[in-house]
Image 1 (tube, rainbow, N blue to C red):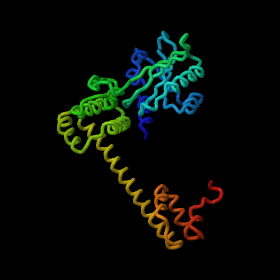
Image 2 (tube, rainbow, N blue to C red; image 1 turned 180 degrees about the horizontal axis):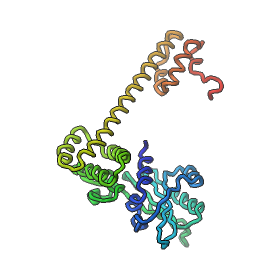
Image 3 (cartoon, helix red, strand yellow; image 1 turned 135 degrees about the horizontal axis):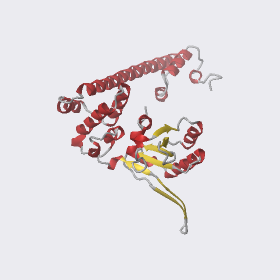
Image 4 (cartoon, one colour; image 1 turned 120 degrees about the horizontal axis):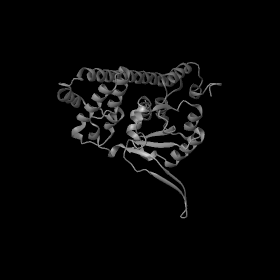
Length: 308
């Protein structure tokens, strides 16, 4: 799963925590509000597809009626250089028009260091006709230690992407793990976001040993943490073995195909192997079978009619 999708899932799974962390200025008393994702609405989904924006539009409604529904547009940027304030402004304007509202709060979460525009004024030296701004969280400059005991799960997990001394890595890792145990009771979600922790704060074998000895030995959450981290690492090992078997099968297929081609049509150029390296196992199987009947090398690789 991509990093972008991982963060989108985090926001959708914990929208109250996400908005409290990302947009505290606009999210007062957010725990009392009802939040609905708009991503499944067809007209909103089409907007996202049109602008290729990795967004999570949320409709937030406070029950006491003192505020009308507010639309929050949350965008995550793994690579800061790809962020476009123009794209975000266009999307928000289109969203406001589609939903017939002016109450839109754009929010951007930046994971990596880089420069980005925070203000887009459109106009001349006489008048500014459009003044677009957005809320943002720039994780590389945020102090992870400030969230060490936070009861906001989105903040606890995102400590891993914040600023902290290398000597505090295991302490931050442990705070994220214990936060997951304390704040999430669902075993499936615990496992899901234990994987999040492993992605953004992987430990070497030596660090894992130190973590067990220095942090887990006397922790009341030792059993829970060791349970889901062991599952995550075993799944990772199994995926690695499966990928290795797949790569081994492809190598065997390529060797077989090259031997058959040389037996039937003579020596082949070295560049052919490079071409075969990019093929999947199904395509290689098809070419191997085709060698038996083809009257030339070109015929082996020719796309059959109707398969364009």
